[in-house]
Length: 397
Ligand code: AMP
Image 1 (cartoon, helix red, strand yellow):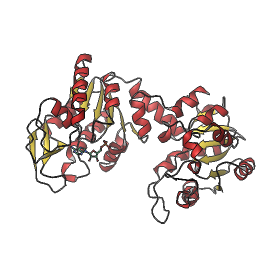
Image 2 (tube, helix red, strand yellow):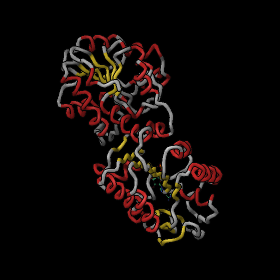
Image 3 (tube, protein in one colour):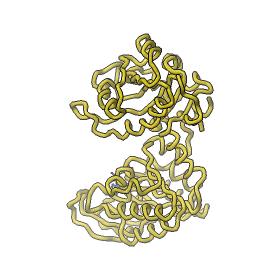
Image 4 (cartoon, protein in one colour):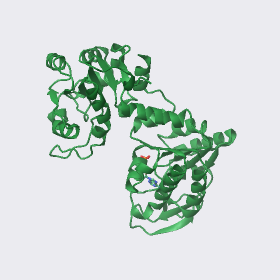
């Protein structure tokens, strides 16, 4: 690991790639500050070590060049308040003004650069643009794990201009070392729990995980494609006909490798996609027409819980049902509680991927699992077995 704790930052200008792509309301108030809070330890580390900080980030999806609504200047008050410090602002992320502001930064000072995506060169991974950014710092730190799966100028290409001075920030380091714990060094038995709406988008994850896990639990909307592959009647449940064959292949692959693939046996069905729909329990193989499965049933919860409790490593991605509806939340809630219980008993658990993070939040269990990954797409690509350009770039320099 290119650890910032092992690097002398005194008197150095640290160019830090952060992910400040936070949601704002129409008065530019920050409505969720998790990403800013997550970057503070790295920023403080540089400042406390006698260095200065230059922050760069993308923000929103500007189309053709600068657009006021995507200016990072709107975040200044919020960043200053959370950091407890004045922050300078450069209207452009490259060029003369940014250059002289960075040049004149004193130890302990912080400069925020304008939105990187005002230049199309950022997402194109343009080397010349990366070189111009690189002029602004003496050392490069990447702390934006959420964009680590993109080979953009500021997340990957730039590292080549900092040989021996490309480092991981604390957030990035945490994400990578926790993901490595499950993908590379999982203690067995290793159980992966996959849910969420669809099989599509998760095929590569399923295929990669089958090669690593002892147990693969399937829940959520994606279970019905598997049930169809097993010859069941799924009624009006979510189904991807074109992936039934893929599900069948996954089942065969799991069997051949001795992986226990756990598919639900009972489901809570509803007569409509609504919290107030009529509901009843049903075997997964016999869902009547006009009804759809919106959660896993109690028998399934019991089986899954037993497997979870006997695991040493757990990876959870995707809810077991439509947990946003209170009447169909119990499968997701009880599985989350089982993971928390296993964690308390010494199991390592990693939860990641948008909706499972929202689910542990809803049930107040975020601090009862070992690690909650905020990586989204980057985390999913990592568990698909792909290399992350943002990580590789730093390891190479
Ligand atoms: P994903 O983004 O693929 O992880 O899917 C998450 C979404 O899947 C959540 O919003 C859930 O409401 C939804 N979901 C989970 N189970 C089901 C189900 N049985 N039927 C329809 N949607 C579901």
